[in-house]
Image 1 (cartoon, helix red, strand yellow):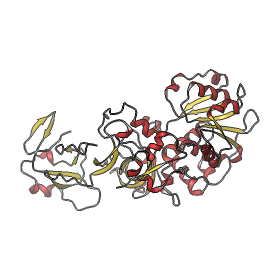
Image 2 (tube, rainbow, N blue to C red):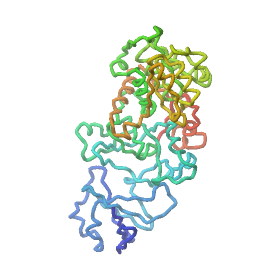
Image 3 (cartoon, rainbow, N blue to C red):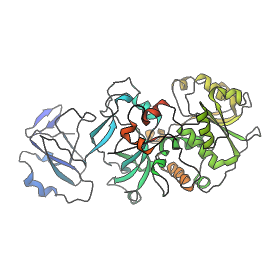
Image 4 (cartoon, helix red, strand yellow):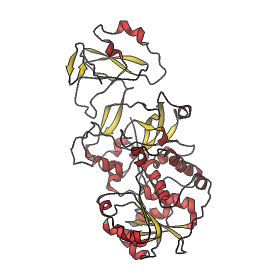
Length: 464
């Protein structure tokens, strides 16, 4: 990679650097504009510019450091594309709005270090499956805080500006040059997307995502409702599948009540959701109820009367406090729960309670890891021939094993469109308060999600 920024060439850490009062800025065109061909611009270039500097170039300012004035830099790009020339004077250092975007990010770990910057480079689709999306709403999740606080406060982030946010809704602005005809149909469509946690997140005006993690939002589904789906909704759907309660397109959007295999005990099939009032718990309750109707009994653990009321509203039959699992539900060799979705850290005490109430051949899905995951006592689970599985919605993305969560997004979107379920948007959500300038303030929506006491889902609107 060569950085070119001056009139006289000098070596700096292996990069060729050039300095001048004016820079020839070469950036990708994002529309069908009239642009000069390479051979037509020969006379306009300074005579001191070498052939090497005539390649397509993009600007890379220092990220998340608005106050730091470093010499502008241009990166030699290996892709042979059409480009235009933008002159930028050193004195005022004007930057093209078409190459930059506003983000809510941080160069230091810690939630309190989140800040706006307007000079972050706008990403571009590179891989054949890439889409550039202009973000309208971003999904807010506890994982955002986990990522922001995974190192001591003030520790510099390893890659400059760190941007969290792992799903949302927006409009497809551009595609990869290698996009297929099917992918081209997504252009300018409103979509719901899940993000790759290895890349810049959705606390930004633009994001590049894999089209296999994108679904078109059907008519009649509000954008704020669709933005509740990506992380929590897909997690809930995958949890239900892992504990033996699959959600298919046919039964969820056509009002078909699916029969369920009776519990070995002869009692009604019981699903226990530990932490039922949050985003994942709310989605899991609604999805299970919409598919299996009265054929399933849903019990949720909560921590307050307000949360209990919320879970009943979502479709639960009963709520209990977490410390009442063993006293309110049957324990011992026969147990009382066929399927369990655990949305809390499986501490020694909690996991022992889950093992007690699990029925023979029952299934447990663990969604939160923590220290407790390192020392699970499986002895009673083994005795009951139970199954313990884990669920992280990003596993297939990180591992590249099977990427097709667009189908999960579509299933939930179609269920909302059909009226079978409603997005569990928190009763505390208001559109005015959801704007990212308000959400980032102390006590705003970002902090509310981090405190862990939100019923349902909160989403944040990405503004100017």
